[in-house]
Length: 272
Image: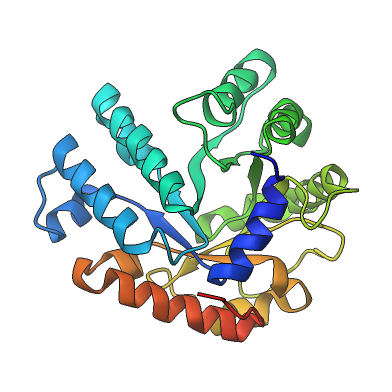
C-alpha cells in the first residue's frame, strides 16, 4: 500500500458512492438463502456477497463473530473472504470491536492491521471502553500499515445510549486529536448510528470518516443520514446489512439503488 487509508477511502467513496455493505452470515440468513449452517454454507454465502457487491460498494464489512463461531474452519473462510474482497478492489472493514491494553491490544493490532497477517484489513472497529488512550498502539499500527480504525462512539443499538452519551465527547476529542495533520481523512473514524434521533456531539474538527450503521432493518433511511450529519455528510459512510442481504437474487440491485440514493442525498457523485 502506498496511500494512507484516508486517501484510499476518499478515492473509493468518490468512485463508488457512500455505502458500506456488511457480510453478516447469521444462521437465520444462511437458512433464508437455502444454505446449510456450516463452514461450507458460510463460504458460499460470503463468496456470493463478494461477487455481488465487491465492485459497487465502497466498503464491505465482514462481521468476524459469524466466522469465529466455527473455529479454525470459520477463520479460514474469513481469510479467503478478505482476500477475495481485496482482489475485487473494495476496502475491507473487519468488524471485530476489540479493545484492550498494552501487549493484548498490540496482538490484536498485529492480527488485523499488520500487512503480513492473513486477516489484515483496511480498517477494523475498536471499542474505547478501557480508555481512549488504550487504543494508542492500535492507532500507531494503523498509521504504520496505511490502515484505519473506527472507534465506537454512539452506536445504533438503543440500549447503548445511556452509557455512550456520557463518554462520546471524550471519544470524539480523542479521534480528532489523532487525526490532526492528516489529509483527506485521518486514520481514526467513528461509529455513529444513523438511527440516532439527533447528533448531540460536534464533529466539525473530527477530520475523519464516520461509519453510520442502521440503514434498513434498524429503521434509518438515507434521508435520515443526510439530516443527521449535515455539514460533515461528505465524511459519512452509511452501513447496511440485512436490508440488502435478505434476498440473494436482489442483493446487487438493492445495493446499487441504496448506494445511489445515499450518494444523491449526501452530495457525492459516484463515477460507477
